[in-house]
Each structure stands twice: as C-alpha cells, then as structure tokens.
Image 1 (cartoon, rainbow, N blue to C red):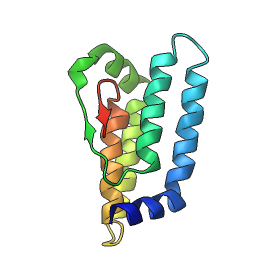
Image 2: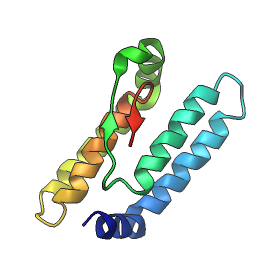
Image 3: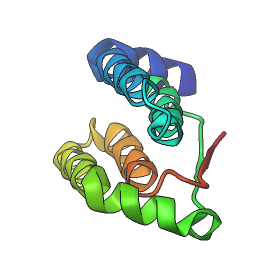
Length: 118
C-alpha cells in the first residue's frame, strides 16, 4: 500500500509540491541568513515527494525561536492550507489516506525546526 500510495501521490500532486518547495529552499539559501530556512524547505520537499511510510517527529523546544519566526512569517498559513486540504480529502472515503498525509505535513510546515522525517 505504501508504494502504491506514493506512486499515486507523486502523479497527482507530490512532484509539483516537492519541486516548488525545492525552488523555495534554493531561493532561501541564496542569502546567508536564509540558509536555515532553506534547509527546512528541503526537509519539507522530501516529505512531500513521498509521504507514505514516513513519520514526522516534531520537537518544538529544540529551536523555539526559529520555530516562532517561521510560524509568524508564513508557517501558520501553510499549516492551515494543508489542514484544509486534508479535511476536504477526508470527506470522501477514497481520499482519507491522502488527507492523513496532508495532516502529517501540516505539523511539519507549522514548526519545522527540530522536526525529523523518517
């Protein structure tokens, strides 16, 4: 199920979202100040590319200041978007596994610093 879910995910939305996050990470890494934020975008791109079978272990207290800066300047918007899409997908029975993946990603995009994907 994990492999089939990842294949369907990549074909429907995973590749586009991963490429956009990778591009965002490259843009952040152009400046020295933005490198930590760019690395977090690369972490998100890895999860978005193939989320089935991966777990997100969030540790907000590892980097609370960086997480608050991220959350205030856009993390909350991305988390709401992912949660909203997850709710929409869970309305149908077929979309429930994909909705769960969006909920997993909402946690990561809200507070990426200190979180691990694996």
